[in-house]
Image 1 (cartoon, rainbow, N blue to C red):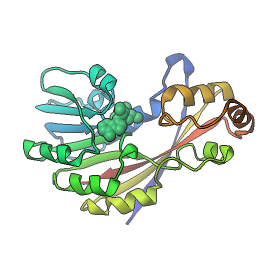
Image 2 (image 1 turned 120 degrees about the vertical axis):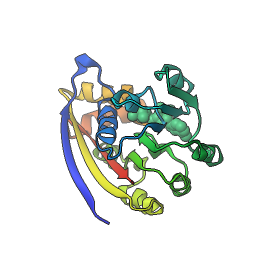
Image 3 (image 1 turned 90 degrees about the vertical axis):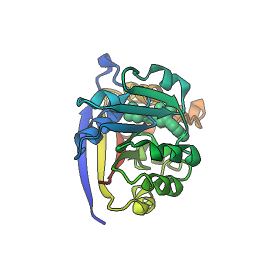
Length: 230
Ligand SMILES: C[S@@+](CC[C@H](N)C(=O)[O-])C[C@H]1O[C@@H](n2cnc3c(N)ncnc32)[C@H](O)[C@@H]1O
């Protein structure tokens, strides 16, 4: 199993309020790397439309699926574009989409929240259509977790790749993103506002204060495993 490893560097610019800039890059890469242009598209965990905004070709149907009602409400809708409330952990429900003639499934920065990745990949393989998935790994915020003495929240790239053996011909790319900040204040403000911590708030006030003092970098680390099938 060969995995291409890529490193990317960005600088956070607070004046633009770019709290989802890494997620935007993930969505852009997934769409950019598409080989065969699909006309009927599913986006799992579509959020407010990062994948949709990257698609600049004419399509017939775009179906965004998200668990959060607030996201469904603000995803663009219109001719051929729908966004529905749905749970990618509900595999029976997901499989009902299999007979609807979709040609490609995207998922950007969402499947790290899958409860059972083996079962989800098993289900996605039954669609028998190309997949483009970007999944955050446990190396996201790795120094932050180590400094706070907390176990990482997410799966490792190896664990995800083992689950992905269920996807025939899966190709992997591991991208390490570094996001640099001007100050610790800006860095910790980003963590709070970006929602990347999965809502986990396990540190007390004094532990957080110590973490801010002891965190050794002016950057945050993210790691995303990209999985592509044809
Ligand atoms: C980090 S956001 C990414 C959103 C968008 N794909 C993007 O690239 O900006 C993760 C999204 O996954 C959604 N999500 C999490 N668990 C889900 C589930 N079980 N089923 C459907 N959507 C889910 C969240 O509501 C959220 O909108």
